[in-house]
Length: 361
Ligand code: MRU
Picture 1 (spheres, rainbow, N blue to C red):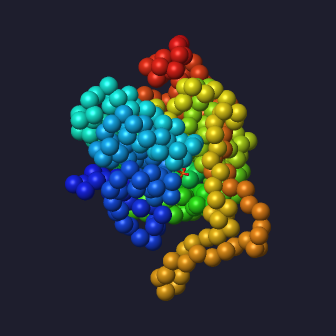
Picture 2 (tube, rainbow, N blue to C red):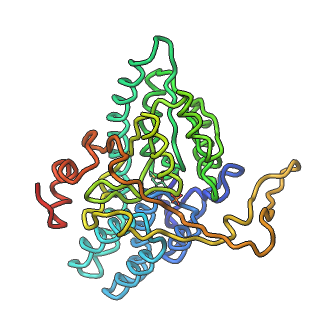
């Protein structure tokens, strides 16, 4: 469970402690919710959206006036810039709450936040069913008795969502269906979401996996050891460009060069129909140099320690995300099926959201 409501507020699984400690922490107010997103105690586009929705409910419960609502919306929106689910959830909450009398807002805010969280689970389950069909077709092309080798980057797993995950949903459904499946897990420097989070949750479910340094994927693909790449996304444009954790683009290039299918698991709240050119238009989060210059881990006697790994004073660039152009994407696995990474297919699959942004088929 990554997030849940309690009598005191909202509890989240603090992902900064994983994989060494599993601890639920209370978010008792708006400030705590905003801090949890900023500090990446919760992370991953869908979970950022759900946490923001609950954060807004916490804010409105304390201060239900128009200005309280506006301040809560602005505070939460400023937490992280790239994942569009944040804005999607906050705008949806505000649109529902603003017409109401302030005294009626808190109850509706909690109910809508619950709805957003529940929808995430349904969406991801559907993504898993569609992705499973892709996996079945790919396995059918291999000799009988083969294992399907899947490569994934970052954590687009249940820890990035309310449940199931997006990229991991087909993996879990394949595993539950008895398919022989093995996952190559990119470690995903500098925050190691693959090594710390994806490996942890795959182990928890019993799915076979191997953690690889980020630069290994191309080599594996050249040697026929990857049947399919599937990743998540923080924002996908109307033209199908995919923004995801830094390093995704390099995996897509390697997949393209080696004829390996490259799929993106895409819940519809992650589509931003207001942008088309991902490289030019999506804001890319730049994070602290310390994430690159230092590493944390568990010592032999069980202590968590942080050590410096760069020469003192070394200059660092730490971009959180990159954009994979649509031409490198084999297909987008959405809750409404697998669609091409292009405007016509996305608008046809999601006419309501596209229409709201002024796009029609
Ligand atoms: O910086 P993070 O850990 O929030 O980045 C997460 C990712 O890039 C995920 O791949 C993406 O949010 C999709 S999660 C279903």
